[in-house]
Structure formats: C-alpha cells, structure tokens
Length: 159
Image (cartoon, rainbow, N blue to C red):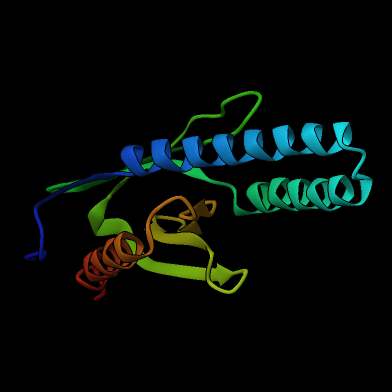
C-alpha cells in the first residue's frame, strides 16, 4: 500500500504567537480606551466598548484556539494539541497506526470560522471515534491542505 506522503510535520506555533499577541494587544487597547472614556465621562461609549470586549471574549472562548501538531511518519499518525487560553493546560495526544484510520471528517461552525476534525479508526472491536480536534487557530489555507492530506491517507486504507 503506497501513501502520497511518507513524512509530514505540521504545527501552528508561529501563527498562534501572532494570534495570541494580536488578541492581547487589542484587548489592552480596548481597556485603555474604556479608561480614557470613563475619565472623559463618555459612559455610552464605555458601554459600547464593554459590550464589544465581552463579545470578543465569548467568541474567543467559542472558537477554542488550540496549538496543534501533526506528525505523520511511515506507519503512525501523532497529533498533539492543547488550548491556547486555559487555566489548567490540558495536553492531549492521539497516536494511531495509519492503517487503522478509516474516516476523516470536518464539521464547520460559525460561518466556517470554527473547524472540528473528527477521526474514525477501525479497532478489533469495531469502529471508534476520537474526540474532536479544533482547528480554529490554523490558517484557512493550511487547514484545507492538512485536512486533504489526512483524507488522502484515510482513503488509502479503505478496503
């Protein structure tokens, strides 16, 4: 059985640094603006900025930005991921033989902003699905390429 690729390594570390810094700086600018408008007694603008800040925090939480690392070597697929903003970092890892990978499915939410990757594998007891991996912190172009490669690998395993 020949796969399209024998080795692949991907992580979104650099993009995640940019994303985290952008979110932190924009949040800081919003807070400083609110302080300035409180000082100027422009409470309507403070209310609008407060609503904007809360909406941004809720959206950030819903999108669930994750650091992800995909490593595909000859016969194994290893995926490591953890949330960008979390009180208690919960590091997760999935390691599976490529031959057991049967289905790669992506569910899109929030007008395509949030992508959840679902992997299904074949075990001796039957089919099993791994918990969804959120790809929101992966740039759109790289998401497509990554998912297409994983789908190509899984289609090579169908019998």
